[in-house]
Image: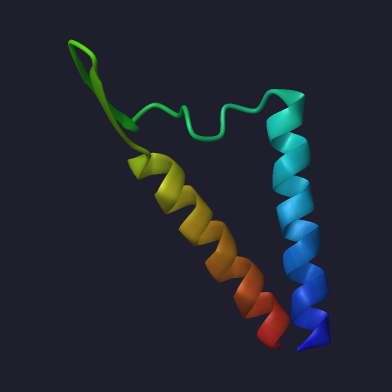
Amino acid sequence: MGKFLVIAGLIIAGIGLLIMAGAPIGRLPGDITYRRGNFTFYFPLVSSIIISIVLTIVLALVRR
């Protein structure tokens, strides 16, 4: 459990560094944005898929 928490913390810190460096996480092509008047709907479809793939790979490596 401790190893998993350390790795999860490092992943979260790495994502934070990417965002601070200006990586377009959350604003990728394929993310859905709908604006009408003063209403905005945003659904990060591609960002969610990429995060899911990365987490699947990392957790598969941690389990070994």
